[in-house]
Length: 263
View (tube, helix red, strand yellow):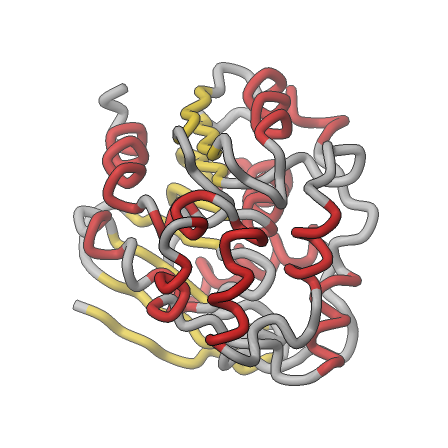
């Protein structure tokens, strides 16, 4: 069963989608990630009750009056759980969503059962990506044309998109609604780092990363896995930044086994 509803969270009309039955799994997307970008993954995690939402200023969620910091985004994610009545959940965060997931596990440890961090880092002081890939990724007009994005997808995201850039057409990329939304989303990430408190995280953690990620180099994942107590690292050979999309059939079994405590 799938429900997609609008709730008022922090005074913002917020799109929340809940799908399936079973243990809850909160999905937190990346910089421009909205609910529709999980479509390819959801059938592969059907044993879970997945909870996805459009973050402030993205997709069908209202733009706030000021940027949301990572800490405030974590509080926003906790409020998503509140409005649908979920006390504790597994959490999967991708890229920027991985930073929010780390902060959620730090600020609300009682809400997080198991933690999966995909294509992400500890934020400031992390190893930066390739300058050319970052410039293309952050360009406001990068997602306005699927033809244009297809031409640059491999250089931006790496992985399977180098050989199959046409895959981006099925993932519902949307540009920010307007420049203010774009600037707000970027501004909120400035200066955040989890480095001082990673050793204090208590949730069992799986770190998943590709070895061909131009935006977030693999060393960042190794740092996360080395500092989070008991964390496991799974490296996807030839996996890019969007490995959860372009290699979903390979990665989903690793994630579901971890969440079911079978590995």
